[in-house]
Length: 329
Image (tube, rainbow, N blue to C red):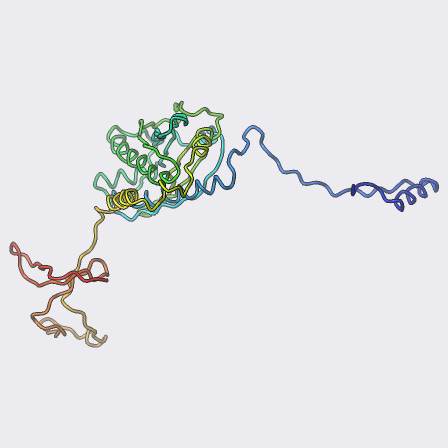
């Protein structure tokens, strides 16, 4: 009852009226009103968005490993944003020609409706990957045209892999078998999601070979809300992350993603220190004595890490090293 006048205030007002003065009323501070769009109410709590953050952070790591192995170029992927909006806002922001994968989430739960999502790879990332896979350096040239059949075929394989990678991050919450339904290069004809439907847009920033752009995952909010309602309790005995079979599958997925990555291997005879004067005065036929015995093994490095040692020799008329021992680090 903070708005009720005190007796002293009432007496002061009566006194002013009796004297012919206007009563003085202190104005309240103006209330700040925050706008709220009732046409697109927020459907997800902060806790639910934190779960989605965790899922797609994991997905970003898997995506980074997969693309690095596929392109043989280091590829960085990070989660930028998760946002609720109407599908029309997302769709209208897309260019005329797009690379969109239509994906069936394949939820293994009869109580959950069939859920189709969209994975949209920006044209900058798409053309960079295509250039690399067709033998180029992985460079992006801005092209305003529809995709060719060859380009769509290449991207179909990549989109299928991107779809399959969704399985592991969701595994501790709900079982699914995602699969690619098809590729669409014209976003205006996509009918799987209504234009006024609310969707969750997950933005993943991809950087490869100096090209930085976005891969978006678009999930209908009504389906996602239904899926999250069926989430498995995180730490039940049958669903623990430490489950041996799942850990093995996770390890195999990571190894498959990086197994084709190029590594530099060096056979090092020895390493010695020379001062600058000695280096500058080196001439042809000079002899640099090493600290190793002629019968000593030489060191083999993978990158900058000592991996094993072995003996120098020849094989098929080429210099070679026969491995003797692996060195524990």
